[in-house]
Length: 465
Ligand code: SF4
Image (cartoon, rainbow, N blue to C red):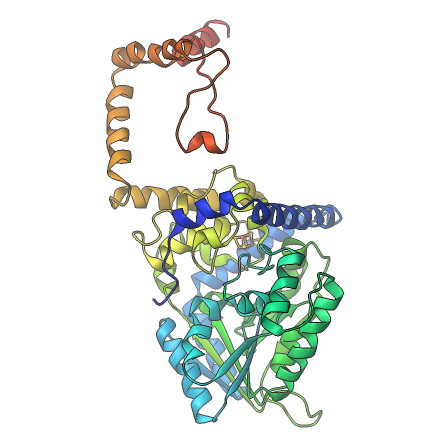
């Protein structure tokens, strides 16, 4: 799989040292989470909705083979060309083939994290075909030669000043940090690109097996322009996005906007159910859908982790996660980040490549509390941690330390004897000073050891019961 190499420790160190980034991420996640909480407070049946969509996704994922066949048949009936891509390379080549056969030179893209997953922009860079992101946040990170740092707010890590400087440097415009002016600069450039594009590429939030159609949910209308203006439309969709029927969509549309942006509803829901019928003169003449596996069927076969395919990419777990809030999305080193990224990275990229990701969590459970499809993220991260340990992908010193710990903890007399020492050693430290633990103490204080120790306290607790 062709992706940016993971270099998680380096990214984390850099992120923790970057006060501006932490402030920008903290502010944006905080305000989005506050808006979410305010909106869901007005939906009394919120928990019922979560349970309902969990069951819909469970059915969709457990019967995916059946629904995919049904989807393909119905797409064909609607004159939508269906392509199956087993991995990123196959998906890229399918899209290149469509572009070359139609002699296309200009592509506009919108709402497609899946194309980040297959590294499409870099692939086209040397093919003399321009691929331009059109959602404002995506456009900004593309100009900055980065990948999104958040599932929903791709340029979350950048401040207004950063964006003003970027536009001045890359677009040759006068510096401004006024959001309205920045927006109008981007709009001017993008409108021109939409009008001249040969192909529009989007993702799909949900696809419907029973009708062979799909939808894209958005706020900016860039997906609408991407779908309706160019002659050819290509949707790149992970196979897990399929749901059985359109009748279930309202449940998802009630859950997704509050979870993603703290809105009651999204501004636009674009439906694609075939090619332009000419009557209204709108829509593409050619529609393709690329159904991407890229490791998803491997996850599907895994009963313990299959649930991670229920994700609707709302980003709520990122906004709730204390780790994400401090390190931002780029620290995860891949296109999926936060608690769901930490669970997906080792599954997509392998336990060796993704060995650090499941540990980027405090396991506090905040992610599971907010997940609209009720994915047990802490449970999956624990399972993945187990697998990383069992596959020997932990550092030698850590394995050694746990062996010694296990030897001590399984010998009560030895444990009791040794457990006196930390408190005794602590007395040698200057009054009130904690242990100087390297790395740990850079961000927080190491708690002082209890004078009595756990054994004595436990006995007291039992005796006083
Ligand atoms: S895991 Fe849940 S909360 Fe996180 S992005 Fe996916 S659906 Fe949203």
